[in-house]
Image (cartoon, rainbow, N blue to C red; front, side, top):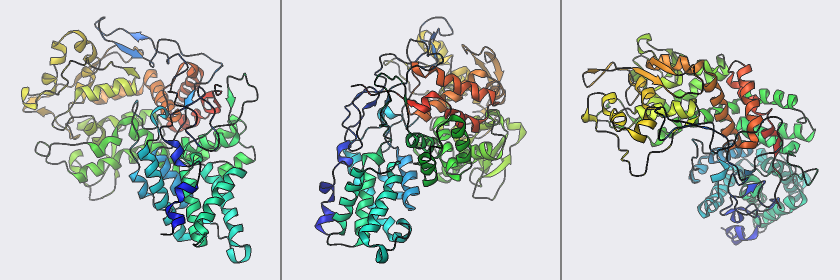
Length: 591
């Protein structure tokens, strides 16, 4: 390797090395320039001094721990109109977003991106801006990944550079043309003179003593290591120094729109639309959003939300006892990883798009590996839509093998995990964590015949244990007709399973009361305003990369109302996010 390439990181300023430990707040930290991210301090999310809203609701027994409805904090969410924006930490690209963006930019296999450190999960999602910092390991891996991707990209140099003819135009002219075009896509806005100088300096470092292709390769590496690529920077100055709501530029809107729907940077068409000022009003953005949802890229991106929300993104780290569940294997796990995305794609793009269908449909997408779990037959190695046996009373995502397996222990089911999912992810009520001195080890499988008997110790314990667990366990017991890998059953260890369930302390009183089995539960959930609003809230959190706070009240209400008015249309939920003030504005930078 030539010295110029070996020592390239020393030659190029404002790249990943300036990013170590960056966790500054946009609106609450020092403004970030177009060069190095990480110069804006290290403020934490939520530094506006007031947590998000939510009033405590007493536990069902009236004492001890309780349910928090809404979100953390002790204030009330702001009402319309929006008068201020929530300060937001800088949003680094997640590993998923990096891979999608690099694939679209370069047209290469993005397997090297797998070497990046995993993103931390907060509140169920791995895109929370408050924890998307850059460690020294990130910086090192960003260099190595950029090298691998750039090397692969220049193997098809003509396609990469748009077929620029170096013989007729000259190498430097083609390199400049590439810097302008590629830089715009990579940085998600027109390149500045400074951007161009840095990219061309990288090109020159690679071209000196090397070839044109090597110069382009080094330029690509430089772009992929730049803070302008790694972060979603929003630096447009407000019209007034006293403004509490800072409108985004057309290119910043295009970037938010693209990452919302494609989980990747905008393509040339969307950047061109921004350049023509076509994203200036909300109706135009809604129209653009619907068109983008029809693009295949949306399926990959939107299903990522569902995998994280439902919990099936954890399938790769899930373990099961093969002695207790001999039908479980790596092949079964891999089939589980495919079934939920296939079902979500069907509901959102082929079916009726409705939340009620997501929660209640008696169908699943089954491959040959999963067929024995569902009690059906197929020879297909890819997921096929199948109607499931009526006797099993399956209902939507809540009875998919993938969900049931993740929300269970290696050796037995977990009424706690399954009930907690319903309470926190479908009802948006937060259950306090157990006291530090409490043993949370699941009971031994041999301690009693059924899970209801084994986990009944929570109620017998009284005090705070009972107060919290009666909010989860009675919901989770209704799932007991499905074992720890999602297989239907009517007995456990020879004892008949009792599927009676109960919901307490719901803010939507129609949810409260008894029911039998998951199918009845799913029907109650599908008809609930609280559940519908909660799903909208989960989408808001995923979309904004943070938890809602006081200033978000109007945006959240706008989103929930639009979702309700659409009849629970999950596609329109995506579009509705683009109509909120939280999407259109940012907070001003503190000085």
